[in-house]
Figure (cartoon, rainbow, N blue to C red):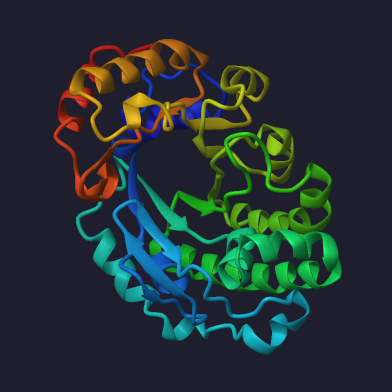
Length: 321
């Protein structure tokens, strides 16, 4: 059974032959997101937000906002023409040599609805706006959802992906940024439209949300999310896997805030964490390992890491089910 076949068994709620490893299962495509939302190397995005590149990733330039009153958003937010963003060219580049018979094309869509609001006006202003002017926030989210849907439609046309992974971080390690009620009233309706626009075209929707977001996992599943990406151990991962087997796959499980993710973590520590994940989560049958390794150059996914090779070798010895 190859990677695609094994994944399909998992998606259908059956028993896979092995526990997948994220970087082996997917052909991850990042550059479309670079064009539409978040420049990976820093600089201005299509909306005029300046992003600062660090070795850990890119962030909007601190304290440099497009606006600080959500009621003014229409004066400052000008939606780009997606025909001018060069999506077709980067798709052709990224897909060169891709073996679709073995790997699933997984296209990233970064800077979701709440993240985009925070990029425009900062976290403090964004969170206050949800309470002080919910009507303007809802209007903003509806318009931004239209843009995301148009971008996703273009992704589907040019990448022909199996999965779109949509990024919107709504939580800290302790809980949601906002109450579940606020999420459900202001963000969820537009979020649902984004999901349905993808799934209606036969593409799997993966939701990336870091932090302790278990209070809204039921909402995600209800809307059609099939994969929860970046699932962190501050959540009841085993309980979620049990409850939603056949409906939701959990990607993550790595102790991304613990010692194994510190810069000085040894190869032995990294292998031990992979083995823990295999033993603790793998038998559930709806789990994919996503190792989170940082080094002096940055995220191992982007810059590589000498510890990955030994970890993968050890993983292949224990990932059979």
